[in-house]
Length: 271
Image: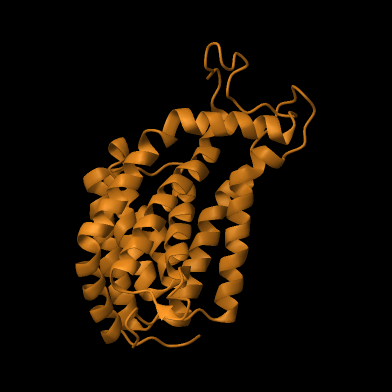
């Protein structure tokens, strides 16, 4: 096993399923910016996708779990999911104090993108059950959290021929945690933005910051970015970014050692 850990392999079929689910999920999030409608027309969100998204996520989790993990690796996945669910309950995102992402990022780094994707989806699902946070927003949270774990597993393990270890690795993971915190908030805002009405900044945008069916892409995108900046970027997302980065810097070295020790004991099989 290398110093930076051996990731759980992803088979070709699992990679295709994961890619298809990610594309479907992304389309589900960005549909307000892509829909073509007459000005003033009433546009209904694609509720069919909303129903199918949990099913798609379940298929991806089952496919990845069957393809690249043995019983011991699945046991590690179960333990990390339970721990992350408890961490979710401790903060529940209040004021951006989110502890879920630091463990998710470290686990994705050690076990790879497929493991990170599954852990991200399951962690938010289990956390929602513990905190009674189940709602139409949950599939989106699971999907975007899964992408956070996926991205951590895709971070480079060597730069300029040198392995990324020690302080360089912690710095890389902390920087990724900050980026992931803001991207997470940005994408989840897309989920609720089309349903909000009457939000505006007096003297700055008297037309409001809501989604307007039929408006050009750049106008809706501009309103959405201002809406995100005002409602989450400077508050919730920044709190999440600081919390994640601090946790990675302070706890990351010790947790990485524990996770890599667990990875050595979990036999990984190829799909």
